[in-house]
Image (cartoon, rainbow, N blue to C red; front, side, top):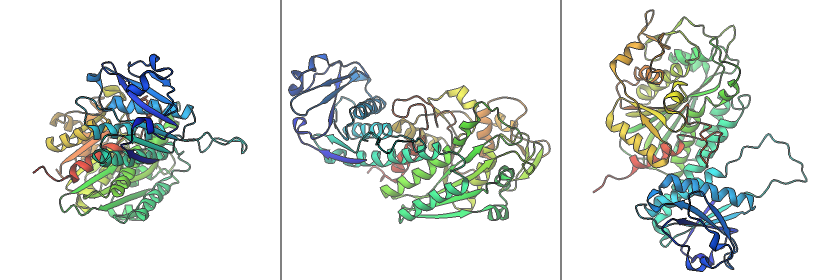
Length: 487
């Protein structure tokens, strides 16, 4: 979507629909108060009122509630509501008058409006039949932000556009069916990204290379599928000159549970078990597009988890890339097995100094945190705080859960060094994270369990489908790391 910034007066805005915010303590601009419908405008949050001044032709008044309650998330919701109304009116262009509100930085407010608008534009309808004589309704093509100082908000608005567009691309990957988004197809998307950006290089390992390196977890999980696994590696050479940041994303393109097969009722949703990998992939693309001066490596283990005569069995013992052995007691606890190899590869072979991994890892996280927060587990307080702040600022919320040596005891095996699923159903999300900690060589590491936030969160700008969770968080984190230290 095209983004335009201007300082022109509201009355001169050229757009099919113009949106203005109204708070409890505020008034409409003078030129709108006496317009037809102006007296009906209400400031309550989520209230929408369409009024008809002479110029611009249509103005949507969006209620924000009490000014003290307005935050960036409320602005994202308001922007999504306005974008949806624009769609209903078949508007191709939308202009927002960026509100000046106490306690809110104008640049961040503008960024939130951009995010809400872009995310609300997402549609996935490629498989719906359409009459050739019935063209699709017009889509929003341009967003204009009206601000007193456009240059002051330009960088934040553009970064928000890039990150939100990348999140929508991750959502499309999530929505694709598993018969199309295979591990090799996901690798193809990584190759497309690398071809589009000079700072990116890609390497894709196939099944023989994966086995030769000793990635026993990825070999074991892929053993039951006719689809070959891929280990996708992306490098962004941003010229940061400092530490190398590692990103790891779980990409099980379809998870049947393997021999420990899942119930049929919701198994179709398991095409989205690659959501962490999609987020990492598209976040790296956005970081490259923004030209951030940071060096990073991304590792995405991609596979299906299927039952067959060649599938890994409960009770099998495997050897991970770092040499630790694991008794596989539950083949549906497969994500930690492929992430274990990817984390080791990221820190040992690729030289990552600190790591974030994202994974739809445990159903237990939905019980603990619902769909509001992802679980954040980390072995380093300072690194955890950086990730937490990026989550809070992006609206992709995370809540930190503890690590403790008693949880570590649950991961210890009897036949092998580790067991991938504990006999006791205790602290399932933390247990899985504690298992992953065994493979980071004590490097600063943060784990985000996104099983509750990757889809069906119900927020106005992402609805009940795929959310692309993690893309905007990772871009915010990269921007923070790339920023020069305060003088």
